[in-house]
Image 1 (cartoon, rainbow, N blue to C red):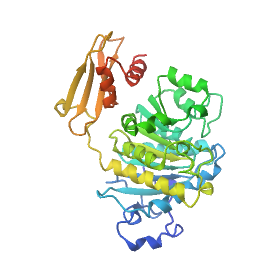
Image 2 (cartoon, rainbow, N blue to C red; image 1 turned 90 degrees about the vertical axis):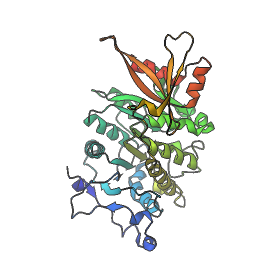
Image 3 (cartoon, one colour; image 1 turned 30 degrees about the horizontal axis):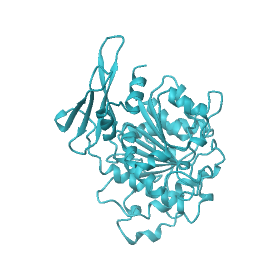
Image 4 (cartoon, one colour; image 1 turned 120 degrees about the horizontal axis):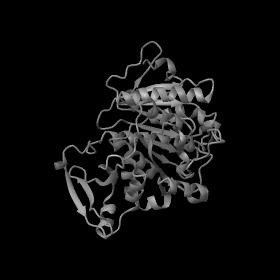
Amino acid sequence: MDIGPYFDPIDLESLDFFTLNDHPQRLLNQIWFTNTLEEVSLENMQIAIVGVPEARNASQNDGSTFAPDEVRRELYRLYCWNKPVNIIDLGNLKIGKTVEDTYEVLSEILAHLIENKVIPIILGGSNDLAFANYRAYERLEHVVNIVSVDSCFDLGNENMPITSNAYLNRIILQQPNYLLNYANIGFQTYMNSPESIELMENLFFETYRVGLLRQDMEEVEPIVRNAEMVSLDLSAVRRGDAPGNPNASSNGFYGEEICRVAMFAGISDKLSSFGIYEFNPSMDYNNQTSQLIAHIIWYFVEGFNNRVGDTVFKDKNLYIKHSVAVSNHIDDLVFYCSKKTGRWWMVVPINSKKSDTTQKYYLPCSVKDYELACTDVISDRWWKAFNKLNR
């Protein structure tokens, strides 16, 4: 598939990049750019920048159409990483006649990239583009875990049209369904209805309040480690750190914290797509938000460069096994700790009613889950996974 015709290549002159040729280690001089004269080659590429100036389904945030190039202005000023990484900027997607056309083409292109083991970094555009991102996995018939970094759940309902704050219900109801798990990082209780919070609990989805996570940001790592897809709505960041978003509140993640979330996402061996949405340049102040997004992307790639490949349990000698007896639980809880990284997993049994057999699901966790088990308590993370996998 030649994806070149679907994109408008970046006009570097219009972005005033000529002043950045002062140092070969600036990202501008380290990125591959496409042009209209050549077929796009993904050979040896590891990451692709995909601009999507689509905001027709935005909720009071039409200005996010102009976000991709504003982010590029700040991103390509930065200096590169110590370890080389092959990144191609595909340009900006040509928007379809309808939003549904954009979803269709974007999902096809993302599926092509993922299938070729090239991680797309999607620069929206509005948050409903996460629906197209999910459909890429649907095209590949690939079961997917989604992590959404957002102050709201964006549920909507089946009778509502898709918008940037009402698309998740469409993913949940999509048939055939390839969603295994959904986790929200950074929701703010007062911005979500009690009914939506209850629904998330009933579906055994994971939800984490921003205040609790900010007390220990290390707890974000195992959540993101289990995801193939991460979408970041800038409303999750406090307005003081990212003013370029009309839906931001006074509370949320700080800039350095959201960069840490991005690094956790990049370092996850499973993760194969990452999207950033809802930046409105017309609301930005002194390029503060575009700079922050550029730093978010930089830290994501920094994490990618530090992947170690310890999530495939082929050689058990690379892990330390811990078995913990828990009251009123027939079998011991089993934990594994990587000798290489010190990261933890716990085993969740999947009981097949048809064949009367049990499979093992290795769920990323933290040392706190193990410590809870040692005090005779099974963590909520384990219970939610068990109930979801054995419905």
